[in-house]
Length: 400
Length: 236
Ligand SMILES: Nc1ncnc2c1ncn2[C@@H]1O[C@H](COP(=O)(O)OP(=O)(O)OP(=O)(O)O)[C@@H](O)[C@H]1O
Ligand SMILES: [Mg+2]
Image 1 (cartoon, protein in one colour):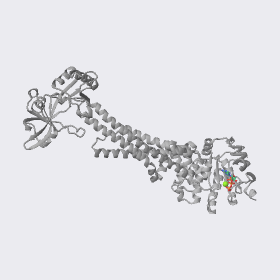
Image 2 (cartoon, each protein chain N blue to C red):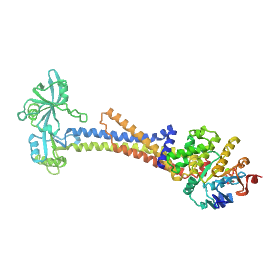
Image 3 (cartoon, each protein chain N blue to C red):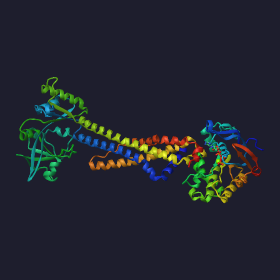
Image 4 (cartoon, protein in one colour):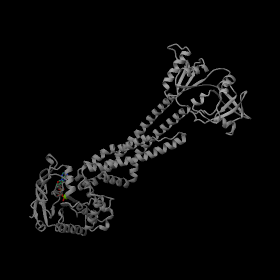
């Protein structure tokens, strides 16, 4: 009960000096606000990156030739993969789906509209591995894939540019010297670090190899680990490919198997470091805010010496005076913390809006900031409160 | 005497300030007994130790030497917290400078001691209002000290001192800041409380008029009780 009463007294003291109370806690408001803002921006940035990477496909590995970097950082040219490599991977590694692709730059023409884009030759596994459904029309039939038919599925961007979003199925477009029938439209995917995945046209792999690229190369083999674990799959593919490409022990790979999750981890790791760095700078301002509270509480104890004397004469013990001043500073800083949380969340929401990031709330850090601000008040209020509690009642009563 | 145990009893009480050459014997062996229901005026020239004696009686301070018994219990060795509890439950104070909490209503001021006694809110308010009524300020309950005259403020202070129903009311120059009309207002109230409610009162004053309201007077000289008797005898 005495706690409630003291809390009431503390509240009254605070309300009595509204402007001063506000200025006192401004440091804490800014400190907490900055911490909250930094952490939330960091988390939002991280979320945006992981979302993008997840949208590539689940448990995705990307196999490419020419991974090594020669002198000067130039990519070392190496033997390209073929469909046989992809088939070997599919046959010899368990629990995976393999999708070899070939690509070629081209210009798509519909009537008198031109659109330069990228043509990708794919197999049926592509849609599974990249987790990329067709929203209109259909996928390629086995016969079309085998025979290298002149049919295509267009990405959302191409659909917009060539057909202004109107019905495209059944239309015939030209790709360079070829003309193909549009049989489907791909679902729209989230943009990936600035590049637009929807700006593409899918054709049967064989069609691209024979008619557009003019060679049997496979530029990229996508592998999806169906049981979730990518590490084993990655190791097995690497071993198999070294064998197939006759790379001697001790020599570097001339290809790369990249785990998208690993890339995601690396990116989010960087974000974490930034968040920690900025967060600790913000924490310093919280410290400064705490010192501000201590300063004002010391002034307040001196100003209210007479009041303390009266309370002691009436029968307040040192601990009750201590509690009163401690609660006052804890209350101040907690309110500052709440204000700061509001400011921080509002600020990061606006910033996310501006930067086009997904806004995420991290309840943990909000809770920690709240507790921390209360702790700041108790910590920095302790010294002034102790000073108040140790006053001699006679001296305090005589104080002018 | 009907009650053989005094409410307050100082036995050869000394208060020595400073150290070495510069020591001051603010009290130099005071023997003093105050019984329940008494109304005692403490007088003497400036610096004679009246306030020091009041601080001892009020358990705001402890004697350097000698004994202080409160209702027969030796409280001279009480520590800070024990003295605070003694004040909380058995003593009421009135000061020369009123010492009300600023920007706090009269009734809230009067409630303050009950707060430390952990009296429930409703009872607190009721008893505070009763006390204000007793000192004739019922309709000023919501006024802050700044909105009250000096005499009214001192009456609020008396209400605050008495709201816990203490054994003794101690007042150090309660009329020191009041004009003669307000002095009579306050002293009339105290005399009335003593007579009707049997409240024990010890007050320090310089004014013979004020001492005239008391039934007993003590004259301090150089930290000792020099004379003890009725106000007329002591002043005579
Ligand atoms: N804290 C202190 N330190 C040193 N000396 C003190 C202290 N308090 C009181 N004294 C001295 O003790 C003596 C008695 O002081 P006290 O305040 O009791 O006098 P008083 O009778 O109340 O005087 P007045 O009528 O002026 O109020 C004085 O000489 C004073 O200087
Ligand atoms: Mg005095």
